[in-house]
Amino acid sequence: MKKSIITLFICLTVMGCLFAQHTVERQVIASTGGFGETGSYLVSSTVGEVATASYISGDFVLTQGFQQAGDQYTAVEDIYKTVTYKFYPNPTAGDATLELNMPLSAQLNFEVYDVSGKSLWKINKDVAEGIFTQKMEFNNLPAGSYFIKISDPDAELLQTIPFKKIR
Image (tube, rainbow, N blue to C red; front, side, top):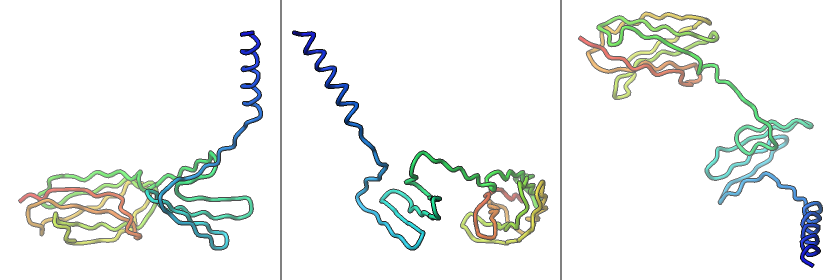
């Protein structure tokens, strides 16, 4: 009797597993958010996430942000994050040298700030791929702490270099 009950239980469990398949849909549960569609563009957002935008063309769907459909992963390398620098001497008594190892050619903005955030001077340079060297004169600055902010024309920050001026 026990064997037949156990056999019946196992059979029912197996049959239940075979016939009770479920499909799980990826979704976001949030307290608030939004969704909009215009032509082939979709935009959706939820609290705690950045907005996502999708472009649809035929069978091709490109989604930016979270809420990716399926197990598709896209990596975009920010090439500017590979910029390395040397700044010497630091601290400086007057003149200093900035060396950038550039992965590509670009137009860059170099701006010097004091610790209060006041911009003291700014120069724009076309920088070629490879090692770029820029001599900088700080003779007219009083002794103190400063920053060199390096950015592209779209004001995307590449590096902030702290330095000290002595004497």
